[in-house]
Image (cartoon, rainbow, N blue to C red; front, side, top):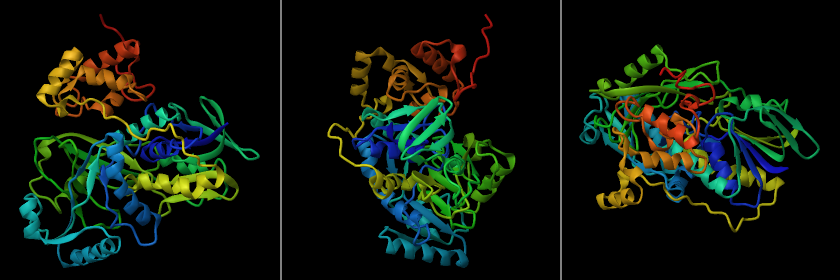
Length: 475
């Protein structure tokens, strides 16, 4: 009998599992994918929004402001990268300038730093800002992170504190019993006092297993992006258009590792797993980005990708307990600013719901920090030489674009919640993220995975089950 089962190991589920692990609770986290952070957490804009955008009186507004402030300490504790880049909301003409005043008023009331710049003043900082931009609202504390790095680090810490993680585990039914639940999966059944539903685009399906009172319906929205290589030096702040009916619009986003993201669009789709790019979606991104930016170097695009946001019929986050299923808590419709809000969402769920059902005794042995893994590119020449002297694998470069060594790849495979796929290695230490997109290093990564996992190269998968890269031996 577990105290809590968390369904879903994206950024929300992982940070909730991490926060729960500080208490004397038995926690099981279930994830249907082959790795954690494989859904919306894997494919988004990676921005820690400061909290000026959500409507007054919403959970989004409350938790966005709180969560954004928590990230500085959280990323320090977990050994993750966070980069403060600032953001510009770019208005084109008098009508859009009026909307900036509304956002500035919210920011002032929520104690969020901001400033106004003329178009010319903003272009001194961002020369590629469109000539049509007449006024800019600046939010200097806006940051970017590496979302799946935070989720992985949080889950590693949670596992270190006793949390159990089961991957490739799909919830098929939940049975309400007298005072507890039985969660039935493809990997067996598990009993628990509480269930917390963080299953993203599948949240309404999971909730309908226990309640006839589900007040929302998930209709995912696909967001598609271009990735520019690190040599473009195209933009240094996050550049937003003035938000509209479809959300925050098409952005230009500098990432923590120097690439630039252009996107997303926002198109509803019926399939909660359809994260494929479309010609129409990418054309929309190309067209819309020109409203705020000029000289867009699409010739430096090295890849495109798409992600799904768990949008719902609710305009707010859905965080609730059901009257006909006490102990079952929905954490649903966590779309933008869900990433920025995630640490505060975890705290809110524990304080508002878990504390009502379970005794929250601090675990004196819990370790809520994680040492950052060795990253050779971050070391001084002297430190690199010392690491290579101790382990020559750190001197064998596998990914030339990103300068990733064999030693770093081996480390991430054998770490807690380690990589079991090519994509898992890519998420953790970045081989394949550079210009060649794995053209040179991916075969080597397959070899290393096969050797370290003691499996045939034919069994190594790109991402999840049934995604083997090699079909057969030919010699």
